[in-house]
Image 1 (spheres, rainbow, N blue to C red):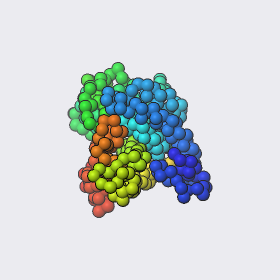
Image 2: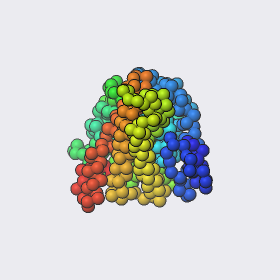
Image 3: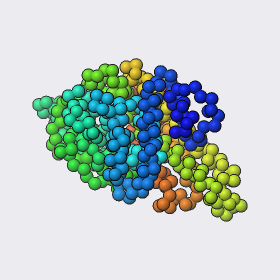
Image 4: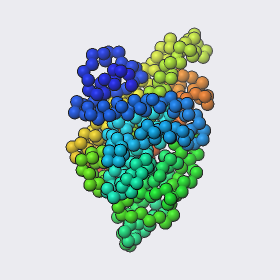
Length: 428
């Protein structure tokens, strides 16, 4: 972050905002959140210190379809897998806005690595929503434990005494290559086998396998392989009811830990935009910095920067990236503030929060389309970081919790007075 935006982030009164860093996007923190903002500034600074290392290893991560272990070790040593770990276990217990900003900073170096850090921290929020007994089994036994997961209810289950026997394959398990536990979705059935709810259940590393299935064109380094479990017992205390969580009811006994009372689906959706924001910022900076050296083929322009057409593309891309930040930061503030007040956002607000996330991700993807065209055909050289950002952004936008066309329909229906029961999903 620039000095100006660092000052604004902690709520200081500054006069030098007329000349901000054009590649930094942000808004001031609310005065009541200065403590959170100071923690955020510190954690973003730690992430920024690792950005070059991530960039230097991004091609290897893309090629090998996993984040290199030295990078994982550096992130762990820096405490960036502990963003959502309760302070009781030595974690940061940061808010949603901080998770987004750390992810964005890391994504300036490598989108896939930022995605892994985000997904592991996201599942950490869900673990913090579970009872103390469960948290002790995971983080009490090992404060360094990392938990990956797939929340889609893909598994099969049978109700047994004290819990459920669960089997299945869960795609796509981002971060699973670096996890000690996973949290997976499956149907909660009654004694007759009828589905009555869906749950998220915790499984230790000894009880599942990783199936090498992640052969894709973008976000390759996320190693989002399939998680496979065969007739695994998951006790009741390791299961989070999805319907209860959507209603804002969580089994955790720690009611003062606001992060773990965040709006369930909005929080888990919005954090996915962090990597998008960072990739957009990095791509814009890359194209602008190269504009003095690159030509526009078959024109009089020996420097891209002198072309009015190029200037317009840069302006449009920057505006789209800025728009993405505004949507994300508004949504993060709404989620964090509702959690602080102990409130579950209304159905209409939850629909808008999902829309904010999808709109932001779409804006970044559109900005990258402009930037990769403005930069020229060289963008598609394997040595160019822009082609990787473009691929990663397009894959990230297709995550199942975003799905922009469905999200637009959900939001439109809510604005037109359709009830939650009349909408196309209750998962909001």
